[in-house]
Image (tube, rainbow, N blue to C red; front, side, top):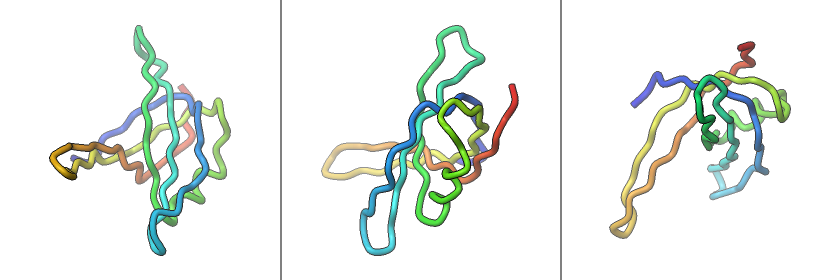
Length: 91
């Protein structure tokens, strides 16, 4: 699934994690603003795109374009929201 977008306020930026020699991951969370009950949504950003997060600060309003990824491991299923484009957004 691709071409999904979500707007919200950046509330968490984690430190990047080195998963393997060629694979790094950074998690971040935005809180939606346009809903009766705001939601805290966690995304991940990968490898070279991690540096893009340096220009955004906690509290900044962002629009995140992302893909939904799913996988099975040992009989359990996991989902992730992989951000591929992040822009500052004025609500």
